[in-house]
Length: 88
Image 1 (spheres, rainbow, N blue to C red):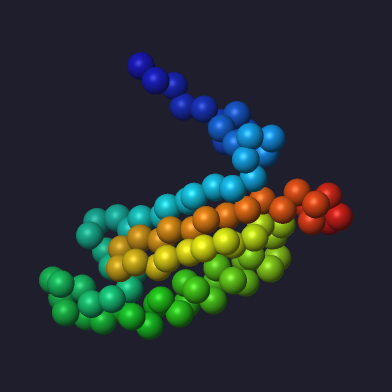
Image 2 (cartoon, rainbow, N blue to C red):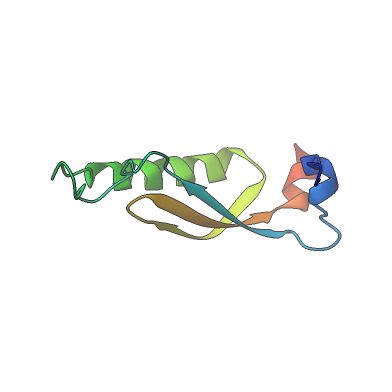
């Protein structure tokens, strides 16, 4: 049986300050785009997600290197800015 590990033991800034994070919708929900089942367009959410990512990048010591907002998930490549963190 595999035990879960705390985030503190999973993330090592000495190894790399870059991380690729993925967040996915559940239950066949759509984040943006046109839902194939209901034909409802959720495209307006794409700008919401992009605006929120950029705003969060400004208030935390994390640089957003790249991101992609897909129909049911989001990819983000993050850089933890240790120098900025130490000045907070």
